[in-house]
Length: 194
Image 1 (spheres, one colour):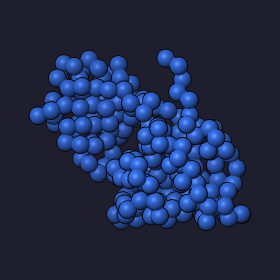
Image 2 (cartoon, one colour; image 1 turned 45 degrees about the horizontal axis):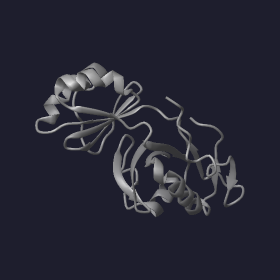
Image 3 (tube, rainbow, N blue to C red; image 1 turned 120 degrees about the vertical axis):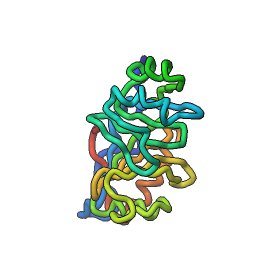
Image 4 (cartoon, rainbow, N blue to C red; image 1 turned 30 degrees about the vertical axis):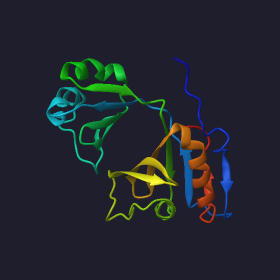
């Protein structure tokens, strides 16, 4: 399969933008990692356990906190749906078929952007209605939210770091909007992917 071309090549040009002398925010596109959606129907929580157990995950989790095991992250995005990041489709296909649930490769469907820095929470407060203060949105939390009318998955990695999973078709316009909104804070684009 051919490599997926970044939608952000012309948007994320390395350099500093906005307020000079202030690096309040850094942005970079993360390397494309496998992303698999696992979905089912009635009895999903029990049916998905044979898929999750070999990955070291004990349950389907909740709608607010990321489950992690090694390089694998698990997001509960609906009553009968999970996103597994960091593991490929073939690794979960057989177990999911045996469990009567479906697995779908979505690695091509999302662009992943990382934001770091002291003003990142302030920037996100301008972009989304999610309360990203430490007390409301601690490390390990995630939310499905909208930024500029585009549905994204927002995850807090540490106190000053966040990850955005953006639909590929909207990523260029959304990241351009994010960059414009960040200019008063000062934003630096880091070279290369993470």
